[in-house]
Image (cartoon, rainbow, N blue to C red; front, side, top):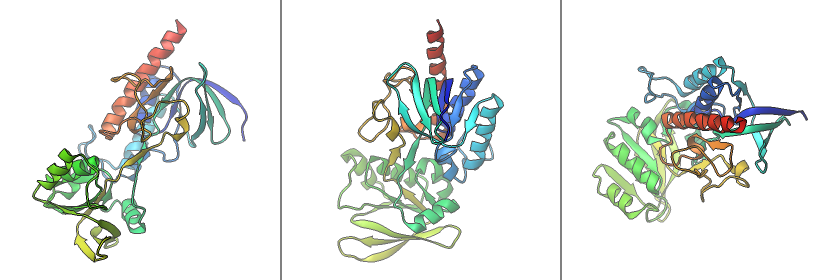
Length: 317
C-alpha cells in the first residue's frame, strides 16, 4: 500500500469515449491529466462487437479496438493512464482529494468524472454467454439494431426506454416481440400507445425470459414463461435486446455531488459539464440518460476538458 500524496492539476476518473476524449483535450492544453481506467477499462464499448456509427471508421471497428486506439491517442499527448480505480473522494475543500485502490492519495485542482453507467441485464448464464460472444445479446437497439435488419428480434422491458427501443427496432426488423413482466407497461401512456399501434410489434404480458437459446455462435431464440399460466414457449429470433435500465456508476460521489433519483449526476448549468462542486466536471453516461452513444460521450468529454481548462486558468489569475 502506498501512502504518498500526489498533487496534480487534473484527474480523470473513467476510460470510455468520454474519459479518453477528455484526456486528449486536457493533455493538449498542458493540464498533464492522470486517468484511472476504472473497473471496466474502455467502458461499455468493450462489450460491443461492432461499432459502425462512430464517425471516421467507414468499415466499422470493434469496441475494444476503438478503445485501444483512443487510449493510444491520449497517451501520445502524455496523459498518464493507470489501471485501477478511485474508491473514495472528498470534495469538501478547494483541493479535491481522491484515493485510488492501491492507496495512492491524489490532491487535484480539477476532477472530470467519466465513470459511465452499466446496463442492467437479467443475469441468465445463457444471456451472458451470448453477450460475451457478441452473438445476439445487446442493451442498445440504436447501437446494434442495424445488424438485425430484416430479422426477428425480442426485447425485454416495460418502461419508456424499452418502448423507444422496440419502436426503433420495428423500423428495421420484420418482427419485434416485446416481453413485459407484468400485465401493464411502466411507460408513459403516449409511449405505450405508440408501441401498441405498431403492427410488427407483438406484446406478451406477464412473460419472463427463462433462457436465451443459441447454436453456440449466435442467438436462435428465447424460451419464455407466462408467470400467470406457467405456460412455457419458445420464440425464434436472432437478436435479444435487454432494456430494463442502466445504473450510473456514481455511488462514490453521492455525498458531495447532486444526483437524480436513479443516480445520474445533475448538471449545475445545462449546456456545460459543471456539477454543484466547483472544479468537478462530468462527461458521458454518468450524466447522460437520454442518448448514451459513444459519439455523444466523446463530445461531452471534450466539453468537460474545456470547462476544466477555463476553471484552472481562472484560478491562476
